Structure formats: structure tokens, C-alpha cells
Length: 107
Image (spheres, rainbow, N blue to C red):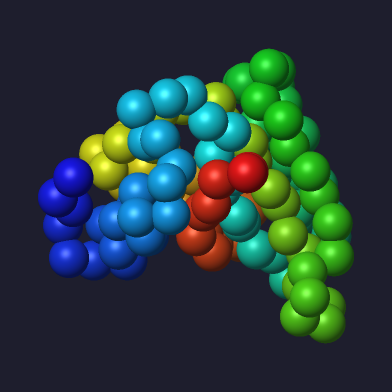
């Protein structure tokens, strides 16, 4: 498989090289970071109201005083799909003073 030469493309290429079948549905985790727990909680509550089937987990990040919201989406990890989903989360997180911090596949 050929992927664009950017962060998302590079991660997908590494996953393919590691033997992960990218033509299957996976739990893809999108990470959003917030400086305050209240912001993270409000973001998570918003997601649960608009996408009740989405798994959302709020927890302290490894960085002190930062809160992480893991958003798990069952999807085929295509380049375009990942980029579109990251952009959507980024736009929503921004409304709660948060930002996107990448993604990964639960293996």
C-alpha cells in the first residue's frame, strides 16, 4: 500500500509493515487533550450526546495537569477516513479549549 508522506501516512505504512490488516474494521482511538478536567468532561459529555455508541474515556494524561479524552471509533483505518475523523474531533475539541493529539489502533 502507498500512503501520503505525512504523519498519518507514515503511521499507516508502519502498521501495514507490522502486519496489521488495514482492510478490516478496527477500534481506532483518537486522543484529545485538555488543560482542565471540566473541559475534558464537557467534551466527553457532548460526544456521548451526539454519538451515544462511541466509547469515550477521560483520564489524566502522562503530562501533569493535562487531561486526555480517548475517543474510540470502529472503522476501517483508511487514510482519508483517519484525516477526516481527526479534523472533526479537532473542530469539536477546539470548542471546549482542547486539541487533537493523534490517533492509534487498539491491538
